[in-house]
Structure formats: C-alpha cells, structure tokens
Amino acid sequence: MTITINEHSSIKICADITLYADPFKIKDDAHDADVVLFTHEHYDHFSPDDIEKVSHAGTIFVMPRSMENHTFGLTKFLSAGESCDVLGVGVLAVPAYNVGKKFHPKERGWLGYVLTVEGKRIYVAGDTDKTPDAENVSCDIALLPAGGTYTMTAKEAASLANIIKPAVAIPTHYGSIVGKATDFEEFKNALSGVKIFDAMGKSVTL
Image (cartoon, rainbow, N blue to C red):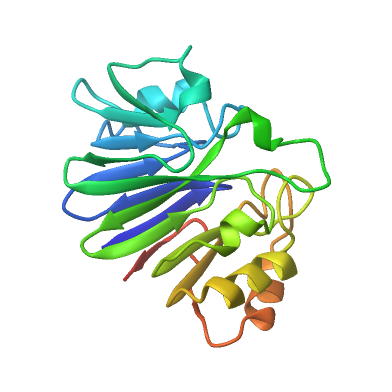
C-alpha cells in the first residue's frame, strides 16, 4: 500500500484499488479513482475541477449526508457512526469538528473516515480538533491535520496521536494554505512511541 499527500489534505491511497480523499490541486488528469471520499464542502476539500481530474464513469463517491445536494454518479452518503462497504473497503464515518472555533461546527455533520484497507485501519481525520470523538478512534495509520488555525496545531495533533496510538502517524493540512513546513518537525518531536512518515508531496509505502 502507498499513501501520498498531494498537497494540503489531498490524500491518495493505492492498494488493490485507488482511493482519494479530498482531491485538491491535482496536477495530472489520471482518472484513476475507484473511490473518492469527501470530508466536507470547503473549497480546499471539495473541488469540482480536481474531482474531474481523478474520477471516471465507474468512480464511487462517499460524502457526508449533509452534502446530499452534491451528487456525482454513484454516491454513498453517511452520517457519523454509519458505515458501508465500498469495493471491499470498509468505510466508517466519524465526526470531524472544531472546539472553540467557528470554522467546522459539529452540527454541520462533517466527517472523517476510518477505512479498512488490506486489513489496516486508516484514519482520515478531515478538518477536526482534538475532540472526544477523535480520541475514541481505533486505527493503525492516522492522517491528522496539523497546521492550526482551522484544525489542530502540530502539538495538538501529536497529543491526539499519543492518545489513540496508531502504529503510524502522517501529518496533513500544513505547509500550503495554512501552517508551515516546520509543522512536521513540531509534530514529530511531540510524538511518543508512534512512528511518523512525511508523505507531503511524496508517496510512502506501508
């Protein structure tokens, strides 16, 4: 399995099938997505131009039920706590929201996902803070926003990783629209017993 962060929170997972989460600033018209997941409808997570670049006629889309006004071909809508199977990948929807800031209110029903791919549970956190819901996630690989402002800071994301204890943590949502390149080192230095990979702009094999 390989995981790539194209930029920001644009994630690509290549295994038996190819999944994207929040495709954004995609450079090539690959049209290779078997599944595309959206965490919420902000422009840097739900980009029609980038959806066009990665999708094809058979692509399956998964998104929050609160986004039912957006439909692309075969679409599965989920609320927090609901799950489904998509081409053999288990998809569990978990809440993603802010605490003490206004950008991602819990009542909007926006999501992160725990994906079961090749027997590994991959937490794609979406735009979230360190919340009680996030602290209850069980996963092997955690992709956590670490750029601050709209989500957790690097230290807060590391604190969450230290609580949920994935085998591997990968920071996202920094160094582009928000956050700075040094957020990776800050995240890394605050981790305890969790392996870290830098997938920003590159692929890592797990």
